[in-house]
Image (cartoon, rainbow, N blue to C red; front, side, top):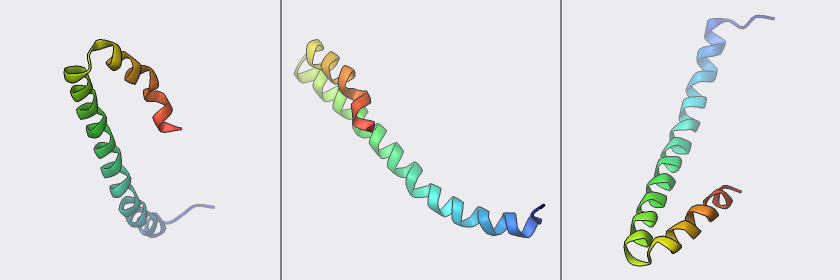
Length: 61
């Protein structure tokens, strides 16, 4: 079963419309993490920054 080019184009538009907010949310989450690391590093010190870096993978589960 081969799909025609028109069927592929029909699927591409909804997929792109779905991916735009997902990419935007990912960028915002990354920027928030970067700013959080900067603030913690400047105010609380190296030990607190190390604790956040160790805890970072748990944010995604």
